[in-house]
Length: 424
Ligand code: DOR
Image (cartoon, rainbow, N blue to C red; front, side, top):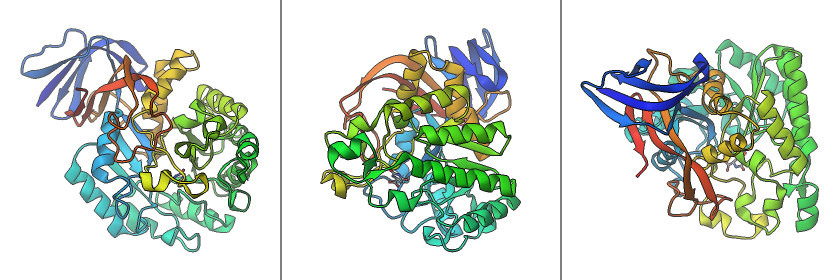
């Protein structure tokens, strides 16, 4: 019932905390933070040399269940999540069938409860069948447990329908997550337009297409007064528009994924299909702009866009390969590289991976305040490990970092005070 995390460096931006402390958990909640807390009746977990933070929340993953269980399941995806230090994930609705009705939402929650590792927050579709034609029943979906709506994987093609979605979602206090892509410019593309498209002889996806779509969403946020969250921002132009929107005080938030600040289009140069992702890996200029935006607060959150695909969908010609890469287990070490390079500090890392996603999705977490649920990540920033098919827990292995050494790893992941992952 009682767990004592002893002597870790507790970093919690929600209380401005960064010091060596004990943390006592009682009946699934944070009971006390302090020095030399009594260990009587508690399981003691030594955390000396480790960092203790509010549990990471990945607000953008694909768990592939129902319908594509050969790629990932709620069970294997949850395992990858907790191994990566995530205590909660929000799963995107492009399943088969798509999560466009309460029955699918309830199914996901039922499976997640049976698996019982991390919290799973279903994101439901904005439009029926993600077809971009008519809206889903936001009220019913919220009641069934959806925390947000998105047509992720596809944009909502018509501005008027997106406007309606924002107005409708505002009434239900449901966050709207936009996959910002101008389909008429990206259609048929496989890689970034520029160096990668020229080098590989493949049709490109221009950065300006993302920026145009982001601009539309910003204008609609202004028109409706409803908040809009921009998923997987990958371009300098997109970042500039978000910066301007925030300066105007518009209700706009944004996320990026670790691959957009860790890699560039060069990763695709050998026709490496594990680096094929949508939006595509961009230029060094874009990468640098995304990194700067994380530092400045123009981008609010880091989410992985964990997109598992089996060998079947990836071990083939580049043009036939599916878009997407897995990210749950490499997000922490890749973000720690920003800390190592002095771009951000550890408190900002915690803000990006935990506090901001909780705030944007309006879900519990993102804090170690007394009384809050004991969702906690304990990690070793120095632990070195090799990314390989053997070390990855995800059912799919489509990581562009296979064979790379990482520094930083979750050691304990706790959900409601229960150790759901322990590094062995
Ligand atoms: O690369 C991607 N993969 N981008 C998306 O938007 C969807 C995702 C998927 O579902 O595989």
